[in-house]
Image (cartoon, rainbow, N blue to C red):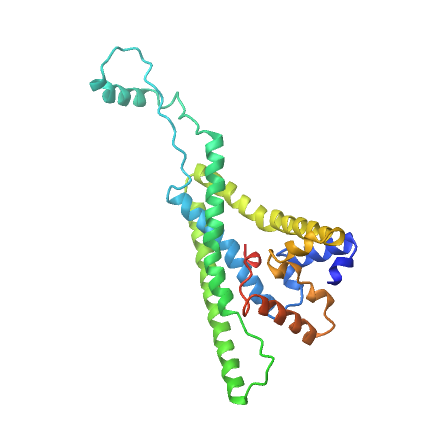
Amino acid sequence: YEFVLWDPLTLMRRLLWRDHPMTGIFVPNTKHLALERILIFSCALVGSIMASALFFEGGMGAVPVKAAENTTGNGTNGSEAPAIDLMQEVTTTTTTEPPAPDPVVKMQRQIFVSVISTVVGLIPAFIVGYLFKRKVHFEKVEEREKRRLLQSWRWKRKVGYGIAMVYLLYCYYFLIMFALNKPMDMQKDFTASSSINMVWKMLLKPVLVFAIITLLISAMRTTTLGDHLMYLLPLTLMDFSMFTATDVDDMLYHEELIGAFFDGGGTDLLAFT
């Protein structure tokens, strides 16, 4: 619990260094290599952007527009309306513009697509992260079992690299084709939705995590209420062993405690979202 005694500047610096996706790859980690962490985050980010483009292509982000009323005053009945509307469309194509969709509804659709695509983008990231997962054995392992484990880890790592590279190449190809072939209105909606996704991952989420942990540590310093709240949050939020561990064995010991708390360890959702 050394982090309770850190000054606010040190706490902020180390929180941003640990939780921001652009600097987190430089934090010491015994679970994943730096390349593996980059591939996991890339699958989550690029996959969510590709899912957003796929949803807009499928019409999920389309905003219905009310048709303009017939104001020609020609006194025709309802049975003649289609013919009149067709003639009006032909004669007024160059002089009228289609009505614009409601901007509020349009923004709501963009945010909705962004949230759904973020969740969908987590699926390949979890698959790749599972292949990169390696259990740390603190007990003595027989030589034959050790060779089997090392061979299994190598094959899983290679399969994870292959899946991640093929998936990322497909996402880039799909996004290029989407940018070249889709209308500008759809691309504007897609850009807005993808920007919301990136702002969340690069800015809002690190700031939100920083605010929650800062408030919790402040409560721990002043009252015992913070001690009870700490058990309601993921224990990895309070893991600063990468800054306080004296050596690799000490860092592994802290990770073993966290893994025991989660009944063998689990995938941290905050690492991918």
